[in-house]
Image (cartoon, rainbow over the protein chains, first blue to last red):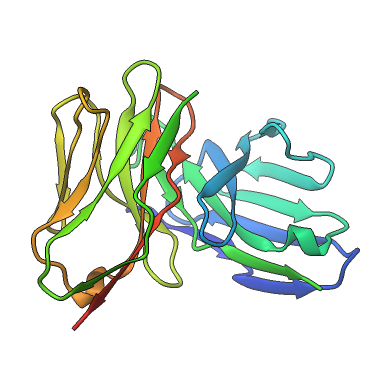
Length: 120
Length: 111
C-alpha cells in the first residue's frame, strides 16, 4: 500500500509556542488530506479535511485559528498548533486519500504513524 | 448521524485462541465498512473492508461479514498469534463522506 509519513513523530514544547507537524504522501498524490486527533483510549476524531490548493474544512468545535492547516501540494500538508497549551497535548494523525483515476490507490485512505505532542 | 459502536477492550487471549471483536453501526444509506489495525508505533493500516450487505472481507486470517439486518461487522479470527497484538478499529464511510471510527479495541495475545 501507499505510504504516508509524519514528522516529527513526537514533540515536546512549552506552553504558548507554536508547533508544526508535516504530513507527506511518499509514493502517491494525495488530493485530499485529513487531520485527526486521538485521545488516550478513545477513537480518532476528525479535525479537518483539506484539498490541495483549497482552504481546509474544519469539523464543528475545532478552532481554525488555533489549528492552521496548509495543503500546498499534492504530497504535503502541514498542521500548525498555534500558541499551544497543555490541553492541546494529544496524538495527531494525518491521512491521505487519492482520487486520481487509474491510480492503484484510488479512493483508499492511508494513515501516517502519528505525532505525539506534549505541551508543558 | 453516522456512528460506530465497538466492543471495549482490552482483550487478552492466549495464542491460538478464537477472536471476536464486535462492531455495530448506525448510518443513513448504505455505508462501506472497514477494519483498521494499529500496531505499536505505527499508523493505522486497512485490514479488510466490505462495501455492501453480505460481503465478507478477509485478510491475514481475519474475517468480517457485512450484516445489514443486524447492522454489524464483527471481526473474527480462528487462531490468533502473538503478532496480532494491536489496536483494532471498526469504521464506516457513507458515500463520499469521511471515515467514522469506533473507539478501538486493544488486543494482547500471550504465548
